[in-house]
Length: 363
Image (cartoon, rainbow, N blue to C red):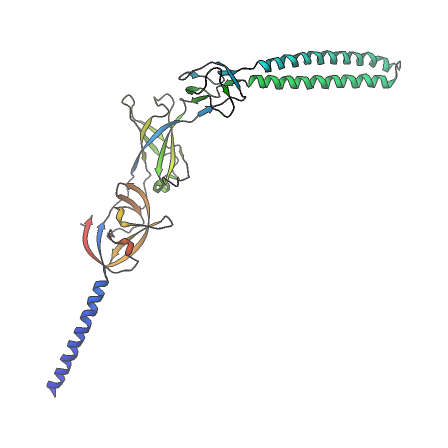
């Protein structure tokens, strides 16, 4: 009886082992094999080095206000000009004749007004003595008013012609350097065509293209320090402040523009290139440096990372704040767990994983 019972128990245990063994093997095979990287973290202030172009605050393509034939050119390429200086003159002979005509009409209208006023004043005294009819005095008054209105009309026409004549001359809108001249004597020009390029070399700024992931760190900074590193041997590095952060991202380059005002007479010229080191503000949150392969990009522009916690993949939403080649600085990861760097496109939150290789700052 005991032998039979023992045999039955042994058979049951063997069957259970045969069943559980394959089942455990199936569960083990369901764990995704991954490589893990242990990130480095820091909280220190970092800098961003960019290369930009020096540009003029005022850089204008100048055009004439009237169309016509170029009669005189007063400046050439490379000349420095002052605000209000004459640059060119269009042929204005017809307008000059028009002005002479209206000047004559103004003189005639002034004489007519003087005579009408004299005649009115002549009858005004007689009217007070009731020596002439009242209607006659009113006629003289009306004639004087009409003469005054006529004088105002022709003076306005003369002023209009004089303004048109003045618009045959192109003046410099600001002080600067003529960098291009697009016309010659005798050519016909129109207001739609550029005739000179004028560049203000005294008011310059450095234009930088900042990657979009730095926006959060720079948006609330009004006086970030910028070290300017010229690429010419005659200039020395200098300090400046970040003047403007243009809060519009280019949808092609995913960058936004930062402007750094340059001090006057500092040796810069529009068109020069320069490197700028922007001191980024200290972050209160920890920054984790991880490989780019650990980041899963989302269609909405966000990003996430899988960390391994107790042999399970845990998804964390992260914010990319800096790039250095294939390394990314992100915020949103806990300190401690390693991040998955292989097969992340196939992982889901909560999937079991089995670590194959470990790299990074694990020790």
